[in-house]
Each structure stands twice: as C-alpha cells, then as structure tokens.
Image (cartoon, rainbow, N blue to C red; front, top):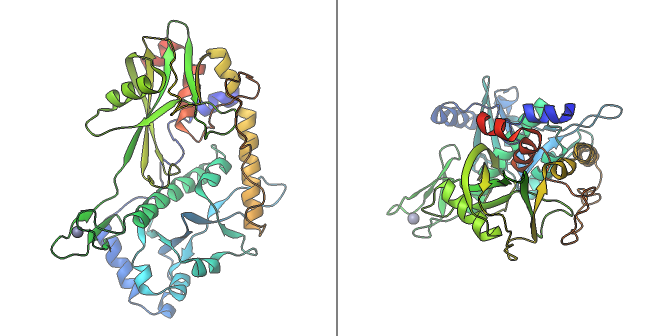
Length: 390
Ligand SMILES: [Zn+2]
C-alpha cells in the first residue's frame, strides 16, 4: 500500500466538517455574558478579548491567507473583535449572532453581515476576503490539523446561518419567526402560537454497493458531477424509513440491484449540499449485492457500472487530489491578497462522455468527502478483514 494511501486511511475517522474544536458550554450563561457586553459602550469594549465574531456574507465566511512563497498557501478563519463589530452594526443585529462554542475562556459567535457592512472586513493589506466553504473544503490539506479544525467551524456556522435565512416565518401560522436564545432556536412571533422552530438534520444514506463474489464495487455518475467523476450511490431518507430500508430502496430505485447485507462505516456532516438543506448528515454504509444486473434510473443517474478493485485503485488518484488542493489553496491566497473574484475557478467542470471508461482520467471524490473513504477503504482492505473490523 502506498504511503499516502495509508495516511488517508489512518485519518479517515475525522471527516471534513467533523471534530469541531469549539466546546459548547452553558448556552444561557454564554448568551447572558454576550448581552452584558452589548450593554457597554464601544470604548469599554476596546480591550475585550473574550468574544470573537466570525463575519459571513451570503454564506461565505471571512478568511485570511497571509502566507507567501515559498511556504505553501494556507487559510485561516478571520475572527473579528466585538469592538470592531459594534462600531459597524447596531445592537439589534448583533443580538442575532449564532453561538458556535468556546475555546478556553473565549466565546465564538458567527453573524451574517449586510453587504455594505461586510465590505468593511475585506482588506487586501490584511489579506481578508469572504470565500465559499466548498472552495475552502477543496483547498484544505487533510493533514493540516488547524485548517481542518477551521473548516469544521466554518461548516457548522454556515449550516446554522443558512437555516436562519431560510426559516423566516412560522410553518404553522405564517407569522414572522423571531431569533431566540443563542441562535439554535427560533420562535413564532404570534403570542397565540409561539411555536418553537429548531434546525433539523436532513439525513442522507450513502453506500458503496459491493459484489463480494466477483470482487467488484458499483460506482455511478450524476449529470451534475464534475467531468469524469464517479461516486457512491446516495439518497435522502423518507419519513417512516430506517437507514437500512432507505438504503435498500435507493439502491433498488437507482440501479435495480437487491442487497442482502449492509455494514455501517461512518458519518459526515455535509453543509455544502443543496442550499435548501444546509444541515445534512451523510451516513455511510457498505452494501453487499445479491443481484448484479444494473438497470440505471436515467432520471437520477447518468450511468452506473461495476468496477474491479484494480480499476478503483486507479481512480483513487492522490496526485490529482493534491494538485487540486494546492491549486485551490493558491487561488484562495490570491483572492485574499486582492485578486478579482470570479477570475480563476475550481478545476475541471466539463461534462463527462457518457459510458466512457478511460481509467486514466476517471476519478472519485477527494478525501474531503465520505464517499472517498468508503471507496478507498474497500479498495485497499482485504474484504474479510474489512467486515471483521467494522
Ligand atoms: Zn405561529
């Protein structure tokens, strides 16, 4: 097994967006402490170091990337002081901050700023700019602990702020929903209703379908995937279904295959899915097939095929992931230094040629996605030991 593959496998339990380093302490006392600060004048807050705020603009966190050659570019979250924020926006807006957690004695909060105020945080001299979380995800080196920790904070904050943006009104009576507590709850403003609204998790099953008899795995393509990218099957859990039932149904609907056994692998928060579902949780399984003829649902999928273990190993192209990561990190670094937004984009967005099986150009999602770890775990582990380990 190659060294870099071993490294990926040994780290797989800390998926991107998991293992958030912030600790959620008593929410009510955190909120009370914040409110006591907001009663002070800006001058009284000048030296206040125990509150940090992460500004967002349209779901993008403020980041900085101070590195310059020859050091490889990295990015960090650009936390701001309460002093700076109270000078920019009024207390009403600041009381809509979302509590993210503590690190030591320092409270961490996130806030979506109006566009004209957010512009105040963008600085080419301080190398700060708002960057899309998906771009940050691709640009983070999986072995960089600090970067991965910042990514998980950014992902959680994005999910909570997007939930607030979407839940504007009571789902029962239509009255404006009010921000409550530390941002983990809203409440209907109608005193006769007062319905509580909480963020809900949208659970998705994601599974690698395995043919044990012929030592193959099934990979599929959706039309919106990056060119030449293949991945696991996935689908939302419907009301009244168990995870196992959802998995069986999705596999049957999408590729017409029956399964007789499934093994849980791991789960991953996924805040970079569809905008309408900011709080997704991907739940990963190995699913063992008992029928093998593929019947592709052309509405859901562009293609699905069986691949041998050797073919899948060729698709796990670590040099490509590293190249994409470096290229994206460099682009983030350029943006922070004042390069124009919109110029330069993420690598490779051309469509695939249907049915193409040119293994040199085919690949699976990078180490930031649970799909990668399902696929690489199968490709590089002995099947029987894989089962006994899980
Ligand atoms: Zn209501």
